[in-house]
Length: 585
Image (cartoon, rainbow, N blue to C red):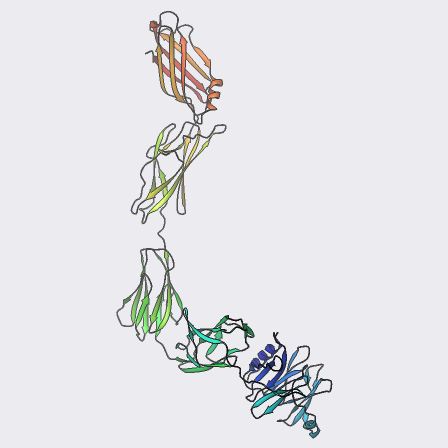
């Protein structure tokens, strides 16, 4: 037994126990056991299964002997491991219970114990008088171990000896976890075979079907090709109805048959597995040819959706080959050793597949990327102007390879001092955000109509598709008043002028009228100026745009039939505009 294993056992004995340690002893098979509980309720879990020559405990000092090592724990719980003569030993205690030395009967030597330095004195030859001082094997204070044939009994002076059971009935259950099912494990279990340099695994579960906690104080396998991993570490209590998992990995270094023993407390399960040379499976990746090991996960690389990814595969020697996974296929090559893995998918993501090469499994993974998103641009068939239903289209840098929806937004920033113009919007819904849909194969949208409005400022149109953001700006300039309609009429007592237009600056301040006679002369009193700043200011407070309609009436004296027409001039902060001669209707 190695020093490492013995030290691990020593650490276990030092660990916290829910039941107090009453004694420690060596059973007839050389296993170190811990006695727990009270008289009449003995339990003796195995701590070290074999290789112990002798052991003892007097209620204060605990020790055991294995090979050329002596393990001693003082009353404060400190352990020491010291070299000692090979063979069994017996402890010598003072009347007060202090450990004073050891007798090594097989070697015919004795040695003093140096409690201060936790060390062994220089061994001396056996003296006859030392044998007369040897006490009974102590299990604790006033508790001794009696050996009768192969039976062990705990004896306290004045009481009857009590049998110590050496092997508890296994009250827990061991299962092999095969996917979602659990299969009971008997005295032997075979792990899947593995090629040298590769590994196979088996997952196990311990269950406690009883109504009381069960202490698991040992979980191990003999050193070699088998190893326990992903495990719990004893001591561990299994609560009633509870469970604990662990796994065993088989990693053979070379061909052949392998076996070991799995220990769970006193339960022994013979584990076996075989190893034989496996075919060499290689795959050609971007970085070159790569040899695969069973259980590997191979990244085949990235491919755009609807495109095809190909990876060459070869085996030496050839074995049956099978692949399972959506979009993955195998194509035979020029020889029985060669194949091509072919993959294609219309769905972005990271699909996977399983490759079975003569019973050895490899995981394959590919990355499916979406189509590159085309860049959108905003196109005006004609340059947008003020107070116009302008048109645009959204054009893609290339035809859509799948359906896309771009987001088209419109925003308006009026010049300083002017309000937002709610008429600036997409028509006919009068909204400022629109989805623009492209079917597969389309590269340009249908025409989209928007109203430019009549307020000086900037219109910003934005198209967003994937990572791309495209903007176009339309400037609505401050300009003199634009009259879209003007009409003049007269009657025997009244002349009337009706004007319709818009003022992008919303600053109309003066309107001038000049009436003309049929002889070409200006009618009296000549040019008539009207200050209209105040009424226009009040009017603009009630509207968001700048369109207006104005009706002006003038009394007529004399013969109205002599009137020919009128000219109107409108002034704002950007300048003035004239109607030209308006003929009376």
